Length: 274
Image (tube, rainbow, N blue to C red; front, side, top):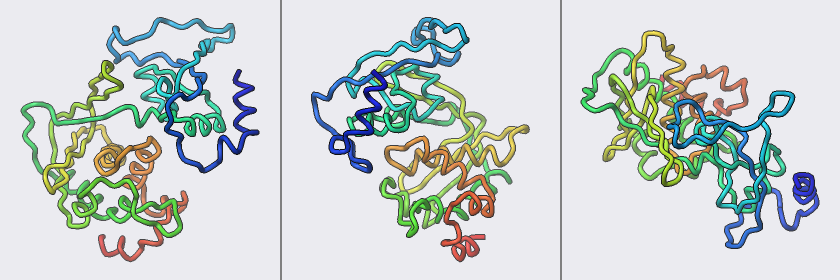
């Protein structure tokens, strides 16, 4: 069946135009999907699936199911795959593109993430919060623009008011003793985990909370802040968005340039911010 799907993805350009949008129609044909990962140990026992048989080589045997577009997901976030064990599309680039066209959502779209400081937290300021705030202000132009495009336009999926909050420096960073992150998948599956950072919209302000840790390097904390900012600034956040935001906040500018990010376009603005 997978071979036939690959054949369709390569030989039916009229059905599956490359670069085309997602098809949003009822009555989609069934697609093949599989659960190929075990949930992480942090998942409540009631949400875990039974142990899956293994092949003689030690790999987990895959059981394929025919499901509708609403019943499976593009497994673009390995962490979510391990936590929730959803039915995911085959690991094939062409088939993932075909599945997206047929209306299959990415797992990053299906999982909602909310975070908050632990109850009773008293926010405070420190040298660490000043460093994080300085980095956010310095990299604002990079966070707001799509560096993958030559002209670097504003990101099309910015939440309302976020551009103004960053541009007008209506951003506060504070330390808190702990942060709880809640991941929800569907109506029933919900997991709470500790987080290093979160970003919350409070009126006209963007409030970033961070958790200090003696063993945590500044780079790791900035990556966590970048992840939180992607969720706060963007609508329909993809896993690739989070990875980009982590890099934009944590990497040195010369490394960003070497990795292909068009930071030179904002050289004057970056120099002024520093």
